Length: 135
Image 1 (tube, helix red, strand yellow):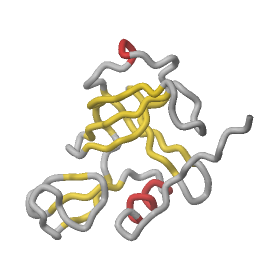
Image 2: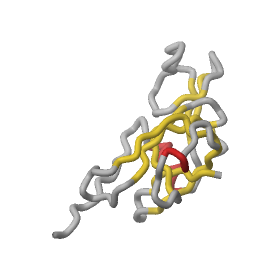
Image 3: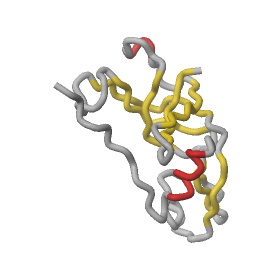
């Protein structure tokens, strides 16, 4: 039985800068100029203070593992097990992603608060995905 095609994201006007940054291997997130908070996912206003005075910034791509789940039976387009994680970037924003590079993922191998850094997966000419690995 053949695997179904992998679902891929499509840029919207709000997320275009993020996905364009991914293609350049830059992690682009937004920062509110009024309350100084970085945030993710992209949107035209700050989720903390609701200001529209926001700018795009290039993040360091470093952070820590905030929480995760190990999918043993997931989407049929992916080889299980795989790790779905929430990463807290050094800039303070949190983003959902995958942790890669962990052979046979178990809780012992994925300590919460472990340092992580971004890995760019060039899926095709249009899509690069942000994934993270333990440092």
